[in-house]
Image (cartoon, rainbow, N blue to C red; front, side):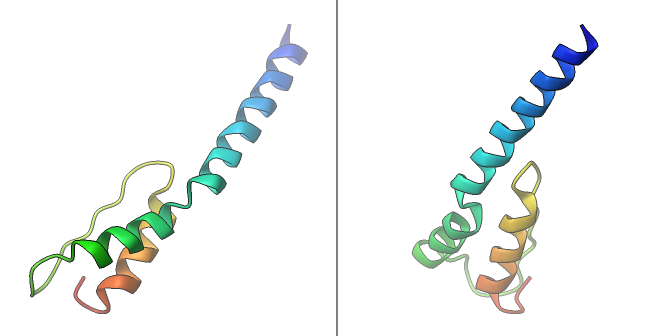
Length: 67
């Protein structure tokens, strides 16, 4: 039973990582901020979840020192 669960866990992780790669979270954040930029002034940024890393990096690049 343990071997089956381990194999299934590996498959699930592969699917999860593949979904994150195809999601292109950084591109989506960059496009969203270009289309609907926040008002002038400082901006607080918070990213939570599986794609938080790429999302926060893209937001910080797009906001260029405002965050």
